[in-house]
Length: 332
Ligand code: UT7
Image 1 (cartoon, rainbow, N blue to C red):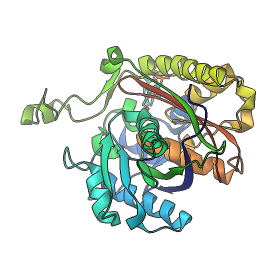
Image 2 (cartoon, protein in one colour):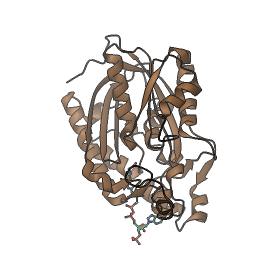
Image 3 (cartoon, rainbow, N blue to C red):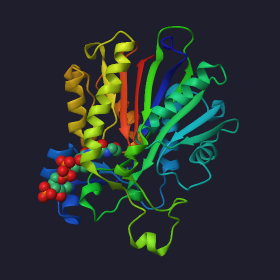
Image 4 (cartoon, helix red, strand yellow):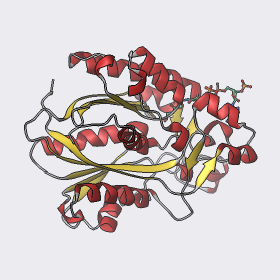
């Protein structure tokens, strides 16, 4: 198993659009209550873009913040990987739009589509490019404008999602023990029917009919995803910790995908994590899909538990199904 880091995170930037959609607002839009939303999901508010603002715009803001923190120019970036399920367009890739808007003339890049696990998959792609020596400065960005694919008359989905982005810079680990240590990813396509957007692809190209049938929105079997998420998030984390000789108590910061507060606390209990290590910010942002993990990294940092040498466990489960966990030592 790889346990000597090849790459480390050297900067973090996040961005959410300023406009809020609160539980009170949703009470006026669908048959729901703020109490139900808080009790069943933990969410109090989400940030939502104004019309005309796309995933690349959030990605660029987050990336700029990361570059500023590191004090480097966009021209130094060699590779841009964007995790998103809401690209500005089917093509070109959002990475191309980010490269142009951010001004990284020497960079190449691509998008990763793995829904809620996409940031972890993109992080691992970036890590490999750095670990092999191919690149020295890689931007990994998770950005989603979920409000662009949500049916705001469907109470089962519209209360959950929000818009947001986060970016990390990856650089060589320089042979010390800090950086990305190990990962465990799985996909299970038999779960594809539990969470998906049926319209607009090659199977159901956009027509008046696909619009009328609301096929361009998120469709979710919430309970099926919930059960799978609790089981698999625990399972991959347990395996990843065990093969690195660690237990839940060794984790300084558990930074999971923010889909539902109950999924996170159930996973935390099963892994016997120290409660103060479990990062939850879903109350502020809702589920921003690829944005949740870097946004939660920022929350962990503000809480003071993301320090040089901290043992960090990242985990996600999402549409696909996709599953991922990453173990790292925070490097700065
Ligand atoms: O990040 C992508 C991965 N996604 C996830 O991980 C999501 C996982 N699933 C969940 O988080 C939860 O299943 C939901 C939050 C989506 C739903 O919570 P739940 O506790 O599983 O509710 P449910 O679907 O079992 O519905 C329970 C009841 C139903 O009413 P009846 O049939 O018992 O009368 C629903 O119609 O709650 C009702 N309900 C609502 N009531 C008020 C569903 N949505 C709402 C709502 N407001 N927004």
